[in-house]
Length: 382
Image (cartoon, rainbow, N blue to C red; front, side, top):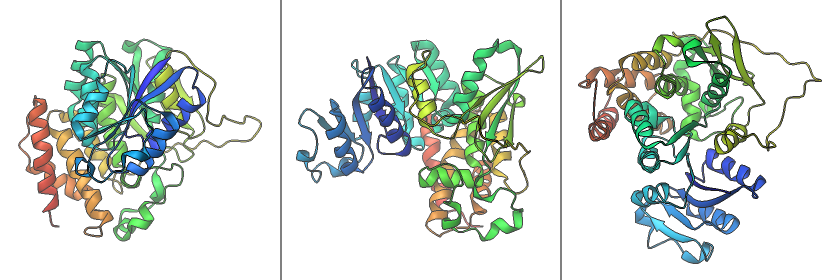
């Protein structure tokens, strides 16, 4: 029986994880759930799964959330420090890191310090502090298993050969709602346009990141540290069907890919059960139907965020923290109508250029730089 803590249980990753746990209740139990402010959904999950603990990160809600809405056996906690507490609890075997953005770093860090298996959907943790995160996992014996469909696919494909025989990995991207659009046409994109993803059902921030292809930029950086690759060993291709989730090319020319219909429950389940495979809860391929799988190179002129991802993967150091923080604010500003869609990579470029780069920062330095970059991004003007 695996005891699981789901950080960010009310988001798309969190709810998919709970679906998997519900389907395999004889082998896994949810013992802790967390949310930022959405206490009503968290209370509903508490009544459904009866976890030992539920955490609301926004401590200002402590006096307003009605305790009676939660299951009687669930301890209700408040504040970000409570997330770290449940992530490191001796009662927890697996921590699912589903909190979006840099806010998820502390919980993931606590899980790694405690030597847990960390099923990581929060790509920002590795983008911000990749070398430190991997060093910590190696020191404590923690397992770091990717939940992102692309990195989970790479993880599976790497099982087919030796690491020293890998020529490169290739991350696939749906291309988002603006695949094939020229750069000039993107100048007039509205938030409503950007939130219409053709394949995946995700939160607002991640959906905008997909539209700008910043999500793929962050995944390039994440893959650099997670798999111990050189930046030159990472490529990206556009694959609108989202069936080939990514692939590995070996030095003999063999290409090993992972395919499945787009459904996050599959990579989540594999991260929870690895190395075992259980009956799936997500749709499977129907090989009696014809399928078309298109693969094409990305347009780096129309989607300059990709170029930022390759650059930051090469530079390392403090660059990842600055790119991540400035992008989070740039997306907020775009969704609020304060800036244009095409301003998102421009803002990120400007803040990256302004920061004092350090090749070997500490965690405290990275967190301080995260705050600095957010302030710079808020006052940026074209």
